[in-house]
Image (cartoon, rainbow, N blue to C red; front, side, top):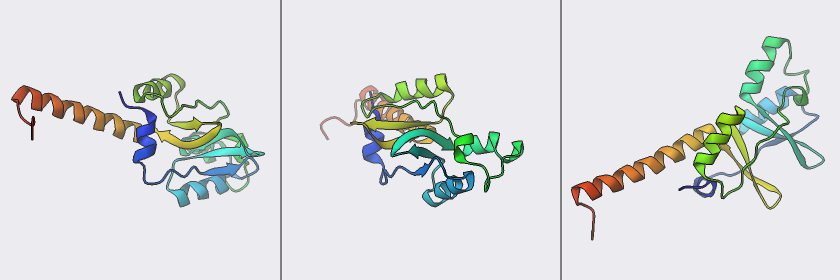
Length: 148
């Protein structure tokens, strides 16, 4: 069974993007755009207090009269964070995302966020795991690939 650690180790870039709680939605959107990410962690006094995602903006932003250049990110962020550890199984991550209706899980190690598992990264890792299992089964069934 594969763990979150594999995602962390396989990523070329593990930078975690943050904005202060005093930032506007527009500030957060700019950070997401520059980092090519779909979520930023929100901090206050160097502590993680929430997460702001593209989905938060799409569902509770402009359409509800919250103008990006005027509204503080704290008004739209999610403060009930669901976090995982590097040794969390990928299947557990999928369960957590489903149970809590989230698409991003911050990864905590020794009191520090070391990355974020997005639903996309999770799906890619689970597919790769399944492909590996399928290849092994094919080799076993066909009697190929041994001793090579």
